[in-house]
Image 1 (spheres, rainbow over the protein chains, first blue to last red):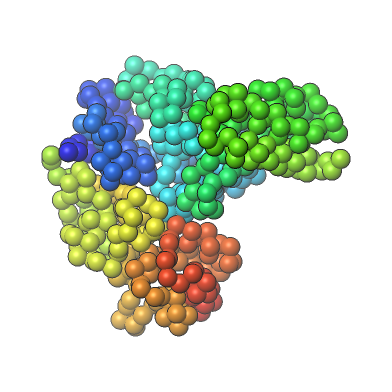
Image 2 (cartoon, each protein chain N blue to C red; image 1 turned 180 degrees about the vertical axis):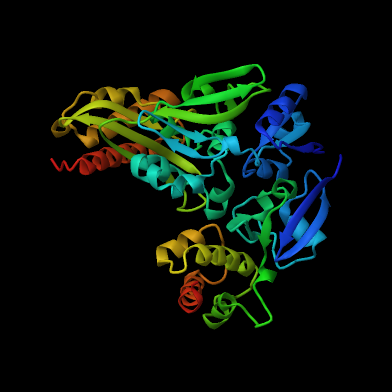
Length: 291
Length: 157
């Protein structure tokens, strides 16, 4: 039987005090994962004595994009990310990832922080944030620490978040100069779709040469990771030399190295290959480079 | 487990309620307020039958705990009809035959209302995006999209 007490934090400090003083507390943000678990009487609730609703904490909301650094509050909903004009313009791949999540109703409630803390292998917020080399800011009564998103996610559904910590915001360096990006996703249907494979590409270009590249897997691997070999292939290449098909081939090979051969490999290999190819072509097209 | 105090404004009427820690907004609306127009379908946020408008946004009421939304404004399908009769959206759904069994209709109407309130002249694509979280197993969607287009044309604010 599920038996917990719902608590409501009225301020950031009150939330931290509750997390410090009580055991077995889980934060409740948009609720779009936790209420599914509640309905299914999931074992998640075996170790939950308190759900702490954090929705009224204003410090956890909002998007700020500076010249050097940007930040997204953990309680920012996917709808707020999509509707932010500045973010749409400067970080279109972050908006595209948010738009691919769930449905309008889900995006109106679900938050980027919840997506990261839940840490499903298919979570759509990870690959754009890893491409940005983002860090999470974790706060407790003991103090504040920053952790790269890659170190934050330990394995599917496991993060480095301590029992008394709250994910406050996600911070990242803003891409500089000339940069191009793409977000790609395949699910079993268009809407309300769980990613089967997704990825983000972010490239900084100087004088038609790729100076910084991040191609990051989404749902293709157990945890989201950069495709090191694809990045190596694209790194320091002139746009004229880039072969999108070759990048796709390398990515598919790398995925199999990470995951091993599975029943889904004959499907995922060509599918991922094509997605990487599309992402690279997006970059070339955006750069006005048609070969 | 201690009950929690919640104040809600539903369809313009204020309610002071006591709710349990596991009580969903859907349960409160249907069981405490006896507003049974809002339907429970999948219970996991996929079908949209339970859609209501929460502070101007369409949400699945099966995905929200009532205690989370203290002080909020909620519109359910019962809030559409007024003394003047059916709402233009409801009339359009009837005229375009956008209803068969009717189970998804309250949720469809709420998603459409949230859309038109924010965007009085939506494109077909915008209508599809607004309704992508609402499943209908009878109509094939075409008539529903046409009904929302017709209502927006007639009533768009």
